[in-house]
Length: 66
Image (cartoon, rainbow, N blue to C red; front, side, top):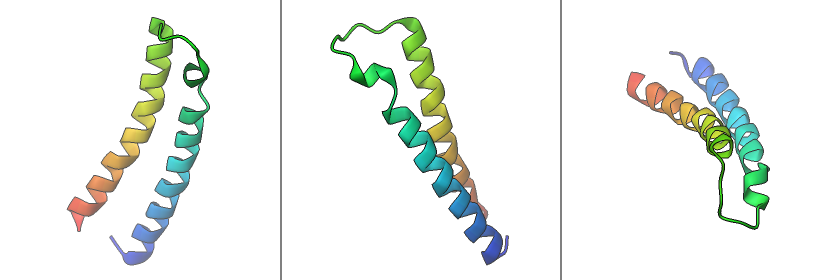
């Protein structure tokens, strides 16, 4: 992979990461005053976390391919 492709890919990953992180932080589960979580809350957070963790897997792939 060329330097330009890697640079473009990293910029996209960074942008996607900040968008996913903002979405994760703004979730209503963090604004709750109780420690009771419904199954739907856990599933929603899990989906948001999967989006963030997939970006790290992408980075790992880039690192390992070079």
